Length: 207
Image (tube, rainbow, N blue to C red; front, side, top):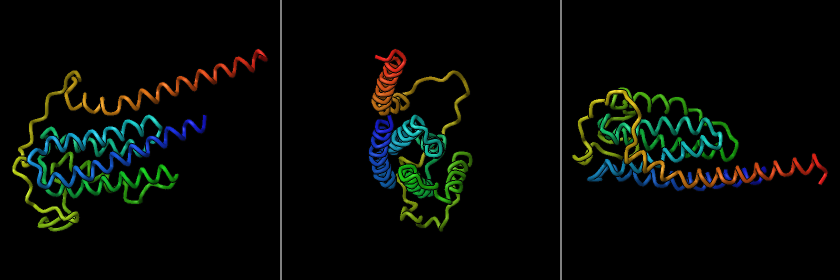
């Protein structure tokens, strides 16, 4: 049982590294991309996949941080928050924090000391729209300048009224990305349970 659980974790860490690499590439694209919605959607799916898989494996701290990152990416993607150069700097730092949390989980190490500070920045950006920059906005710590593509500088859309949850193409795509991995994990867990149940029966009957 322990070896199979280690195998699940190993698969997670491999896929998390791929998602982190895709996030870094996507964040760098935001500076010049003519279609920020597509880039933000890819970033959202990567964060969503890490959140779902880490929650399935009981990595609560990692899942919680991924949710905070996913929330900001979703609001930027949907136009509820206007993309600003300081967002890219914040998202790059959040990506680095996500990588540090993955490494801490893999190595059974403590979470980074500045975790709470980054979480609070993500929450403020979701609520206030534009995060407070750490430096002059002539150039952020990531080297991102104020010159974003005009297609990215959108006016935020009004919040949709609360009502029954509905499926969207973005949500469907995110589910399709992580569904095969979750289904495979479920199948392995069922198979393991069946083996354990059979072993218990053998012990009870002496066969």
